Length: 338
Image (cartoon, rainbow, N blue to C red; front, side, top):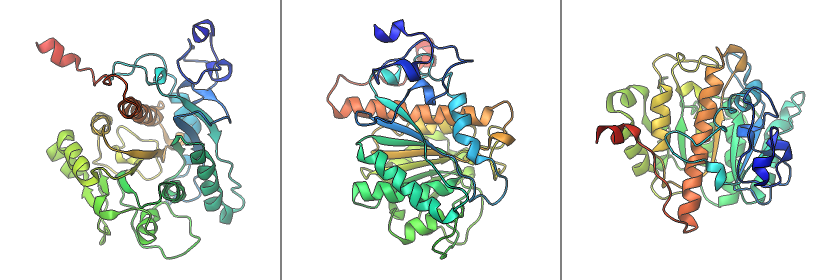
Protein backbone atom coordinates (compact mmCIF):
# COMPACT_ATOMS: atom_id res chain seq x y z
CA UNK A 1 0.00 0.00 0.00
CA UNK A 2 2.83 2.39 0.88
CA UNK A 3 4.48 1.97 -2.51
CA UNK A 4 1.17 2.60 -4.32
CA UNK A 5 0.83 5.95 -2.56
CA UNK A 6 4.31 7.11 -3.63
CA UNK A 7 4.33 8.82 -7.01
CA UNK A 8 7.72 9.28 -8.64
CA UNK A 9 11.29 9.11 -7.32
CA UNK A 10 10.69 5.80 -5.60
CA UNK A 11 14.45 5.28 -5.53
CA UNK A 12 14.60 8.04 -2.93
CA UNK A 13 11.19 7.76 -1.22
CA UNK A 14 10.55 4.04 -0.75
CA UNK A 15 11.37 2.51 2.61
CA UNK A 16 10.81 -1.11 1.56
CA UNK A 17 13.32 -2.81 -0.74
CA UNK A 18 10.52 -4.77 -2.42
CA UNK A 19 7.81 -3.65 -4.80
CA UNK A 20 7.71 -0.78 -7.25
CA UNK A 21 6.17 2.66 -7.56
CA UNK A 22 4.57 4.59 -10.44
CA UNK A 23 7.22 6.56 -12.33
CA UNK A 24 7.39 8.74 -15.40
CA UNK A 25 9.92 6.98 -17.61
CA UNK A 26 11.18 10.36 -18.80
CA UNK A 27 11.88 11.79 -15.35
CA UNK A 28 13.00 10.98 -11.84
CA UNK A 29 16.02 9.59 -10.02
CA UNK A 30 17.94 7.32 -12.38
CA UNK A 31 18.89 4.40 -10.19
CA UNK A 32 19.08 1.06 -11.97
CA UNK A 33 15.51 -0.08 -12.68
CA UNK A 34 14.28 2.55 -10.18
CA UNK A 35 15.57 0.56 -7.21
CA UNK A 36 16.25 2.29 -3.89
CA UNK A 37 19.42 4.34 -3.78
CA UNK A 38 20.99 3.37 -0.48
CA UNK A 39 24.24 2.73 1.33
CA UNK A 40 22.37 0.47 3.79
CA UNK A 41 22.90 -2.79 1.95
CA UNK A 42 22.52 -5.32 4.75
CA UNK A 43 19.16 -6.75 3.68
CA UNK A 44 19.66 -6.73 -0.08
CA UNK A 45 19.57 -9.88 -2.19
CA UNK A 46 21.36 -8.01 -4.99
CA UNK A 47 23.50 -4.88 -4.84
CA UNK A 48 23.87 -2.90 -8.05
CA UNK A 49 26.88 -0.63 -8.43
CA UNK A 50 28.77 1.06 -11.24
CA UNK A 51 32.50 1.09 -11.92
CA UNK A 52 33.06 4.06 -14.27
CA UNK A 53 36.50 3.12 -15.61
CA UNK A 54 37.85 3.29 -19.15
CA UNK A 55 41.60 3.72 -18.62
CA UNK A 56 42.23 0.11 -19.69
CA UNK A 57 40.72 0.42 -23.16
CA UNK A 58 42.80 -0.24 -26.27
CA UNK A 59 40.66 1.59 -28.83
CA UNK A 60 37.68 3.88 -28.27
CA UNK A 61 37.08 5.44 -24.84
CA UNK A 62 33.77 6.29 -23.18
CA UNK A 63 33.03 3.25 -21.00
CA UNK A 64 33.36 5.45 -17.93
CA UNK A 65 29.97 6.83 -18.97
CA UNK A 66 28.51 3.33 -19.22
CA UNK A 67 26.97 3.01 -15.73
CA UNK A 68 25.04 6.26 -16.12
CA UNK A 69 23.85 5.29 -19.60
CA UNK A 70 22.67 1.84 -18.49
CA UNK A 71 20.80 3.33 -15.54
CA UNK A 72 19.09 5.83 -17.83
CA UNK A 73 18.10 3.07 -20.27
CA UNK A 74 16.75 0.88 -17.47
CA UNK A 75 13.66 3.02 -16.83
CA UNK A 76 11.54 0.90 -19.17
CA UNK A 77 12.42 -2.46 -17.66
CA UNK A 78 11.21 -1.14 -14.30
CA UNK A 79 7.71 -0.31 -15.55
CA UNK A 80 5.86 -3.61 -15.36
CA UNK A 81 6.19 -7.39 -15.35
CA UNK A 82 9.16 -8.48 -17.45
CA UNK A 83 8.77 -10.17 -20.81
CA UNK A 84 8.75 -13.11 -21.30
CA UNK A 85 8.96 -13.85 -17.58
CA UNK A 86 5.45 -12.75 -16.64
CA UNK A 87 6.47 -11.39 -13.24
CA UNK A 88 8.11 -8.37 -11.64
CA UNK A 89 11.32 -9.61 -9.95
CA UNK A 90 11.21 -6.77 -7.45
CA UNK A 91 8.13 -8.19 -5.78
CA UNK A 92 10.34 -10.95 -4.33
CA UNK A 93 13.95 -9.87 -4.87
CA UNK A 94 15.39 -7.07 -2.72
CA UNK A 95 17.64 -5.00 -4.99
CA UNK A 96 19.54 -1.87 -3.97
CA UNK A 97 21.49 0.56 -6.16
CA UNK A 98 24.52 1.47 -4.05
CA UNK A 99 25.89 4.02 -6.50
CA UNK A 100 29.34 3.95 -8.07
CA UNK A 101 32.74 2.80 -6.94
CA UNK A 102 34.95 5.80 -6.20
CA UNK A 103 38.02 5.80 -8.44
CA UNK A 104 40.93 8.21 -8.36
CA UNK A 105 41.63 8.11 -12.08
CA UNK A 106 44.64 10.40 -11.60
CA UNK A 107 46.30 7.64 -9.57
CA UNK A 108 46.07 4.58 -11.86
CA UNK A 109 48.13 2.41 -9.52
CA UNK A 110 45.33 2.62 -6.95
CA UNK A 111 42.48 1.49 -9.21
CA UNK A 112 42.77 -2.28 -8.89
CA UNK A 113 42.94 -2.24 -5.09
CA UNK A 114 40.13 0.31 -4.95
CA UNK A 115 37.78 -1.91 -6.95
CA UNK A 116 38.67 -4.97 -4.87
CA UNK A 117 37.96 -3.05 -1.65
CA UNK A 118 34.67 -1.79 -3.05
CA UNK A 119 33.57 -5.31 -3.99
CA UNK A 120 34.67 -6.77 -0.66
CA UNK A 121 32.56 -4.24 1.20
CA UNK A 122 29.44 -4.96 -0.86
CA UNK A 123 29.87 -8.73 -0.77
CA UNK A 124 30.38 -8.67 2.99
CA UNK A 125 26.74 -7.57 3.33
CA UNK A 126 25.64 -10.95 1.99
CA UNK A 127 24.02 -10.01 -1.32
CA UNK A 128 25.12 -10.76 -4.86
CA UNK A 129 26.72 -8.05 -6.96
CA UNK A 130 25.37 -6.80 -10.28
CA UNK A 131 28.04 -4.48 -11.64
CA UNK A 132 27.68 -1.94 -14.45
CA UNK A 133 30.91 -1.11 -16.28
CA UNK A 134 33.17 0.47 -17.18
CA UNK A 135 35.66 -1.30 -19.39
CA UNK A 136 36.25 -5.02 -19.07
CA UNK A 137 39.31 -4.74 -16.86
CA UNK A 138 36.94 -4.27 -13.90
CA UNK A 139 36.05 -7.98 -14.02
CA UNK A 140 39.55 -8.92 -12.84
CA UNK A 141 39.38 -7.23 -9.41
CA UNK A 142 35.73 -8.25 -9.12
CA UNK A 143 36.73 -11.88 -9.64
CA UNK A 144 39.39 -11.54 -6.97
CA UNK A 145 36.83 -10.35 -4.41
CA UNK A 146 34.30 -13.04 -5.38
CA UNK A 147 36.89 -15.81 -5.12
CA UNK A 148 37.87 -14.54 -1.67
CA UNK A 149 34.23 -14.81 -0.61
CA UNK A 150 33.52 -18.24 -2.09
CA UNK A 151 36.90 -19.71 -1.16
CA UNK A 152 37.35 -21.47 -4.48
CA UNK A 153 38.10 -20.87 -8.13
CA UNK A 154 35.00 -19.96 -10.11
CA UNK A 155 33.62 -21.12 -13.40
CA UNK A 156 33.49 -18.19 -15.81
CA UNK A 157 30.60 -17.62 -18.22
CA UNK A 158 32.00 -15.01 -20.58
CA UNK A 159 30.08 -13.33 -23.42
CA UNK A 160 32.44 -11.36 -25.66
CA UNK A 161 33.88 -10.79 -29.10
CA UNK A 162 37.35 -11.15 -27.55
CA UNK A 163 38.82 -13.94 -25.44
CA UNK A 164 40.85 -11.50 -23.27
CA UNK A 165 43.47 -14.17 -22.55
CA UNK A 166 46.35 -12.48 -24.37
CA UNK A 167 49.60 -12.79 -22.38
CA UNK A 168 50.38 -10.12 -19.79
CA UNK A 169 52.96 -10.68 -17.06
CA UNK A 170 53.19 -7.06 -15.98
CA UNK A 171 51.90 -6.97 -12.41
CA UNK A 172 50.41 -3.48 -12.46
CA UNK A 173 49.19 -3.20 -16.04
CA UNK A 174 45.70 -1.94 -16.86
CA UNK A 175 44.58 -3.78 -19.98
CA UNK A 176 41.05 -4.89 -20.86
CA UNK A 177 42.39 -7.66 -23.11
CA UNK A 178 44.50 -9.62 -20.65
CA UNK A 179 42.44 -9.95 -17.45
CA UNK A 180 41.49 -13.59 -17.94
CA UNK A 181 45.09 -14.55 -18.72
CA UNK A 182 45.89 -13.29 -15.24
CA UNK A 183 42.73 -14.71 -13.69
CA UNK A 184 43.61 -18.19 -14.96
CA UNK A 185 47.30 -17.83 -14.12
CA UNK A 186 46.52 -16.87 -10.53
CA UNK A 187 43.81 -19.49 -10.01
CA UNK A 188 40.74 -17.25 -9.91
CA UNK A 189 38.83 -19.20 -12.55
CA UNK A 190 38.74 -22.86 -13.53
CA UNK A 191 39.24 -22.93 -17.32
CA UNK A 192 38.00 -26.52 -17.75
CA UNK A 193 34.58 -25.47 -16.45
CA UNK A 194 34.54 -22.02 -18.03
CA UNK A 195 33.02 -21.02 -21.35
CA UNK A 196 33.35 -18.08 -23.72
CA UNK A 197 30.44 -17.26 -26.02
CA UNK A 198 30.49 -15.14 -29.18
CA UNK A 199 34.28 -15.00 -29.67
CA UNK A 200 35.35 -13.76 -33.11
CA UNK A 201 38.99 -12.68 -32.68
CA UNK A 202 41.97 -15.00 -32.85
CA UNK A 203 44.34 -16.08 -30.12
CA UNK A 204 46.97 -18.80 -30.34
CA UNK A 205 46.23 -19.94 -26.79
CA UNK A 206 42.77 -19.89 -25.22
CA UNK A 207 44.30 -21.31 -22.01
CA UNK A 208 41.97 -24.28 -21.79
CA UNK A 209 38.71 -22.33 -21.77
CA UNK A 210 35.84 -23.84 -23.75
CA UNK A 211 34.99 -21.54 -26.67
CA UNK A 212 31.62 -21.32 -28.43
CA UNK A 213 32.58 -18.78 -31.05
CA UNK A 214 30.13 -16.58 -32.91
CA UNK A 215 30.01 -18.84 -35.97
CA UNK A 216 29.18 -21.84 -33.76
CA UNK A 217 26.40 -19.88 -32.08
CA UNK A 218 24.92 -18.85 -35.44
CA UNK A 219 25.16 -22.39 -36.82
CA UNK A 220 23.74 -24.24 -33.78
CA UNK A 221 21.39 -21.71 -32.16
CA UNK A 222 20.64 -20.63 -28.59
CA UNK A 223 19.30 -23.99 -27.38
CA UNK A 224 22.58 -25.73 -28.17
CA UNK A 225 24.54 -22.93 -26.53
CA UNK A 226 22.44 -23.19 -23.37
CA UNK A 227 22.94 -26.96 -23.22
CA UNK A 228 26.70 -26.58 -23.67
CA UNK A 229 27.00 -23.94 -20.95
CA UNK A 230 24.93 -26.01 -18.53
CA UNK A 231 27.10 -29.06 -19.21
CA UNK A 232 30.43 -27.22 -18.92
CA UNK A 233 29.61 -25.27 -15.76
CA UNK A 234 27.54 -27.93 -14.01
CA UNK A 235 26.92 -27.28 -10.31
CA UNK A 236 30.00 -25.14 -9.73
CA UNK A 237 29.69 -21.53 -8.56
CA UNK A 238 30.05 -19.29 -11.59
CA UNK A 239 30.67 -15.65 -12.39
CA UNK A 240 28.98 -14.24 -15.50
CA UNK A 241 30.55 -11.35 -17.38
CA UNK A 242 28.86 -9.82 -20.41
CA UNK A 243 30.96 -7.60 -22.63
CA UNK A 244 28.41 -5.74 -24.74
CA UNK A 245 30.64 -6.13 -27.82
CA UNK A 246 29.55 -9.78 -27.84
CA UNK A 247 26.63 -8.28 -29.75
CA UNK A 248 27.14 -7.36 -33.40
CA UNK A 249 27.77 -3.62 -33.94
CA UNK A 250 24.36 -3.46 -35.62
CA UNK A 251 22.85 -4.10 -32.17
CA UNK A 252 25.55 -2.50 -30.01
CA UNK A 253 27.43 0.28 -31.81
CA UNK A 254 28.28 2.06 -28.57
CA UNK A 255 31.30 0.07 -27.48
CA UNK A 256 35.04 0.48 -27.48
CA UNK A 257 36.18 -2.41 -29.71
CA UNK A 258 33.31 -3.43 -32.01
CA UNK A 259 33.73 -6.56 -34.18
CA UNK A 260 31.39 -7.59 -37.00
CA UNK A 261 29.65 -10.96 -37.10
CA UNK A 262 28.39 -11.01 -33.52
CA UNK A 263 25.26 -12.14 -31.75
CA UNK A 264 21.94 -10.36 -32.02
CA UNK A 265 20.33 -8.98 -28.89
CA UNK A 266 17.59 -11.60 -29.25
CA UNK A 267 20.13 -14.45 -29.36
CA UNK A 268 21.96 -13.17 -26.30
CA UNK A 269 18.81 -12.71 -24.24
CA UNK A 270 17.52 -16.15 -25.23
CA UNK A 271 20.77 -17.77 -24.09
CA UNK A 272 20.89 -15.84 -20.82
CA UNK A 273 17.28 -16.75 -20.01
CA UNK A 274 18.18 -20.41 -20.37
CA UNK A 275 20.80 -20.38 -17.62
CA UNK A 276 18.37 -20.96 -14.76
CA UNK A 277 19.62 -23.53 -12.28
CA UNK A 278 23.24 -22.41 -12.47
CA UNK A 279 24.77 -20.95 -9.31
CA UNK A 280 25.78 -17.55 -10.69
CA UNK A 281 27.37 -15.77 -7.72
CA UNK A 282 27.94 -12.44 -9.46
CA UNK A 283 27.50 -10.68 -12.79
CA UNK A 284 28.73 -7.65 -14.68
CA UNK A 285 27.76 -5.90 -17.92
CA UNK A 286 30.66 -3.90 -19.34
CA UNK A 287 32.04 -1.88 -22.25
CA UNK A 288 29.03 0.36 -22.96
CA UNK A 289 30.54 3.51 -24.48
CA UNK A 290 27.78 6.10 -24.44
CA UNK A 291 29.49 8.63 -26.77
CA UNK A 292 29.47 6.05 -29.59
CA UNK A 293 25.94 4.81 -28.94
CA UNK A 294 23.18 5.43 -31.47
CA UNK A 295 19.77 6.28 -29.99
CA UNK A 296 20.85 4.55 -26.78
CA UNK A 297 20.40 1.06 -28.24
CA UNK A 298 23.62 -0.31 -26.71
CA UNK A 299 22.74 0.90 -23.23
CA UNK A 300 19.21 -0.44 -23.71
CA UNK A 301 20.57 -3.89 -24.58
CA UNK A 302 22.80 -3.78 -21.50
CA UNK A 303 19.86 -2.82 -19.28
CA UNK A 304 17.78 -5.72 -20.57
CA UNK A 305 20.66 -8.16 -20.08
CA UNK A 306 21.11 -6.99 -16.48
CA UNK A 307 17.37 -7.15 -15.85
CA UNK A 308 17.15 -10.73 -17.12
CA UNK A 309 19.94 -11.66 -14.70
CA UNK A 310 17.80 -10.28 -11.89
CA UNK A 311 14.91 -12.44 -13.09
CA UNK A 312 17.17 -15.51 -12.96
CA UNK A 313 18.23 -14.61 -9.42
CA UNK A 314 14.59 -14.14 -8.42
CA UNK A 315 13.83 -17.64 -9.68
CA UNK A 316 16.79 -19.10 -7.80
CA UNK A 317 15.85 -17.31 -4.58
CA UNK A 318 12.34 -18.75 -4.64
CA UNK A 319 13.61 -22.23 -5.46
CA UNK A 320 16.27 -22.21 -2.72
CA UNK A 321 13.93 -20.83 -0.05
CA UNK A 322 11.30 -23.46 -0.80
CA UNK A 323 8.65 -21.02 -1.97
CA UNK A 324 5.97 -22.21 -4.42
CA UNK A 325 7.30 -23.23 -7.80
CA UNK A 326 8.67 -20.18 -9.64
CA UNK A 327 6.77 -18.86 -12.60
CA UNK A 328 8.41 -20.02 -15.82
CA UNK A 329 9.01 -18.14 -19.03
CA UNK A 330 5.71 -17.10 -20.56
CA UNK A 331 5.51 -18.37 -24.15
CA UNK A 332 2.69 -16.46 -25.80
CA UNK A 333 3.43 -18.05 -29.18
CA UNK A 334 2.93 -21.53 -27.75
CA UNK A 335 -0.42 -20.47 -26.33
CA UNK A 336 -1.51 -18.99 -29.65
CA UNK A 337 -0.59 -22.17 -31.50
CA UNK A 338 -2.70 -24.38 -29.26
